[in-house]
Amino acid sequence: MAEVVEIAQALIRCRSVTPNEGGAQEYLGGLLSRAGFEVHRQKFSSPNMPEIDNLFAKIGGGKPHLVFAGHTDVVPTGNESSWSHPPFSGAIADGKLYGRGATDMKGAIAAFAAAAFDYIAANGKPKGTISFLITGDEEGPAVNGTVKLLDWAKVRGEKFSHAIVGEPTSVKRVGDIVKIGRRGSLSATLTVFGKQGHVAYPDRAENPMRPLVAMLDALLEKPFDKGSRQFQPSNLEVTSVESGNPAFNVIPAEATARFNIRFNDKHTSASLKKLIANRLKGAARSARYRIDYEPPSESYLTQRGTFVDLVVKAASEATGVKTAISTSGGTSDARFIKNYCPVVDLGLVGSTMHQIDEHAPIEDLQRLTKIYRRILERYFERPPS
Image 1 (cartoon, helix red, strand yellow):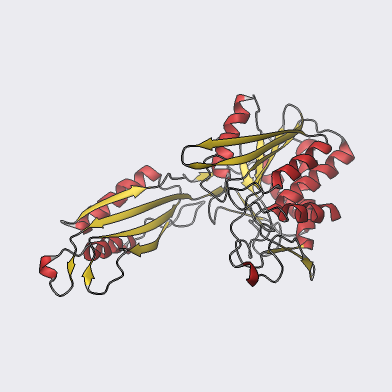
Image 2 (image 1 turned 90 degrees about the vertical axis):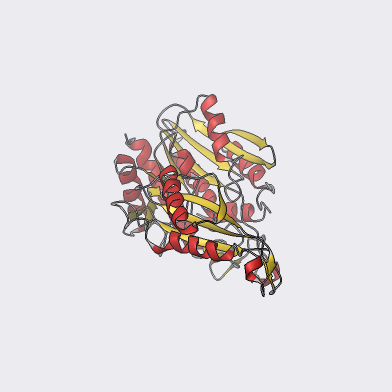
């Protein structure tokens, strides 16, 4: 189990802040290659987007095909001097591994690798396929990462049976939560147009803030739903309101608000847009406005069956923790993988992800490795349907 810590340290020491690869995939690819995996490094690009490094590696062949999916990119560190230990040092103190990505999600990738190496050492190549699908664009726009790597793999003829994404899903103890679905996400920018003028002469101007506030109130006043059987209620959060106006005595010419809706399976992004349009129309009255949407992600659910049951049971067996299923929280790259095969998220406790002094207890890294190792054992003993 010491191996998982060494791998996690090596990954953390790579400055792979999105979109930079930082040496993380080079290290992981070398590690997997030495263990007998067939390794492919792929770069994808698109206009006005950074080029992204991605990695696909596999061992064995045919079905069943279990994919370990994740990302080596991390969010920025913030003020590095505020960290107790340098964020890319991989320092160990008081039984904890510190560094950006320790929980989100270099620790899980290390556990993937350590579990796979241990399984192969004990059993040889799997009676099927174990693969790694690793992107460098999960924390970024997610345009040149998992989506394109999945397409590339499909063209190659890769057929995935099931997938596990190593996002930090656990809440109190490693293995207590397996996520089998996620709510959708819809982001928008609402711009209201007015007429600039002096605040002392409002009759000569048209303040866009007044209708904007009324429109936001209309969006927030009534819940979109009360939740569904598998999902919590949809919620809208306003994330910014601004006019770019630094003066107290000037009525701005326009004002904008940005908001995000996390929505359950009672809606699609298309149906939500219609609902939003109706609410805005009623509140806007004669105001001139425009709404611009970001590319949405839809909600998804992996149905409870032999694969989900296998993962839940393996997690509980490996840790002694009661494992529950959930659809709470934010999105992950599972939203793309679900188009190819059933997928779940299972990883470390996420209490420090994206924070100063992000860290993972050594014991948690070892427990997660045991979970993945147990999943591999059960998966290839009796493949789920």
